[in-house]
Length: 235
Image (cartoon, rainbow, N blue to C red; front, side):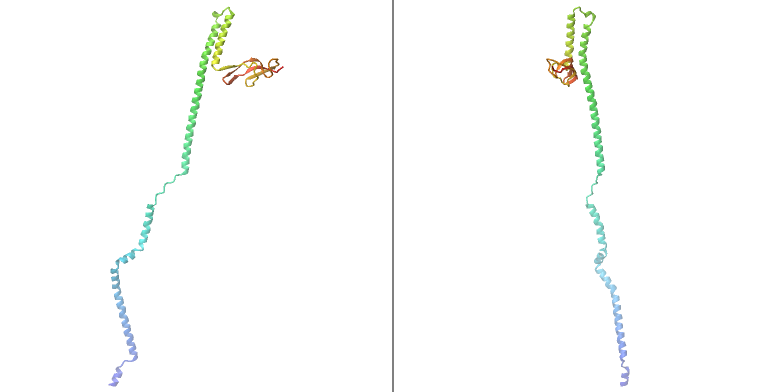
């Protein structure tokens, strides 16, 4: 009996092999349990936190959408810039307006000049007409005086008639503004007198008019005709 028991007792190698097989079987069982439970746990986690997964899934796109909407809002908030006018166009418009105004002023001035010249001419013609009307009366008197039926044997009466006509003529010229220049005895003035010659004189001092050869005439302050005179050279 003792020999049978010794024969049935396992050896050290068998024990070590047995222990190794047991450890291996235990490890395989643990691996199988872990692989079977992981899908279930994942499913449970997915059911427990669906909102977190949706937030995590959408979070990368959210900044892109926000950044896409932000420029549009910024563009809508910014005021529209006013259209800048071309300075060259404004200068051209101002130049055209100035040229037009200048042309209008030149046309108005030309019309004014023509109108003024016409009015002056009409005024001169009217004034000449009035003067000629009065002078025609003098001419009529001369014609009547020289008519054959009015000739008189009395020379004194004829001379008197000529004097009357002369006075009428002189009055007409004086009324028109004509003034005689008679510088006898006055100091010689080259602006009003024309010296024909010099002549010694006992009574008239040197540089003064001795004799008036032809009288001068002026209209108001304008010299129409200088007087032709003889100037004294002294004693």
